[in-house]
Image (cartoon, rainbow, N blue to C red; front, side, top):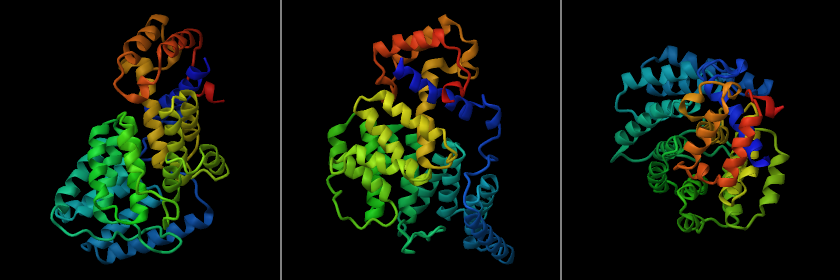
Length: 369
């Protein structure tokens, strides 16, 4: 019962988030309030946005001005406007891959994954045969050293979009391509982390282990420290409990959610299903809904929800489900589920799930209280 209760608690919260079953989450992701930041940080971002608008108004046909306006809008959570700005830029400068790269990123933020994939594929096509270029940071790290490039970001985010869609073979191909542009410690650990998780999802542990070979203690990682420590944990050089305890002490943020999601996946891959679902539930219970760790946990829980309810039932609450419906949902979906996340549920879990769904009338956030 503990396994199913924890999994369903996250899945049901996810139904509110993704499928609009909770009144507090009625708004589209395009218009949803961004995660809170400090007053000082918000003031700084608003000042930079004001400067970007002024630069754009003075130079409306300058691609740099258009890109920075879109980026500054995105940092403040104005995703609808940011996507529009990048789209207008793409119309004016059809051969400039940067507009598709940045719009694709924001499509991931608002859960429009198919559009994200299309944009990143277009960007990759436009950059074919062209030299790579350093991508300036909109929110510089402590050393003020940019750590990513245009080609890296295109392939990295394309891999992520496929991963979020559950298309792991395509994600694998994208991340292998991304490795070609991961020639710095920060880029290497970021790509290796998602590549490792993708291979584990594909049940290819030997290949996943090979991804860890270049990772070692003492690498000069500037800003992707979370991914770096996760890789060291996967490699056995940092205990799971040590990294988990460190993360618990951190404030909820995109960085901490990246670590939490990796920890959840580690539990999942090692047969600790309840613990994995509990971590995913904690992630989606926070306000950091724009972080990749949150989005990934959300999509995993959504797949669990869909497999429990079936494609028709997911549009309604568990409250109205009949016993026959719930039993059919468990038997018909879990037993043939192709996703490794779902196939980790064994026959005993399925029987427990039938009982849980038959006896509990759940409505979104009840188990989350």
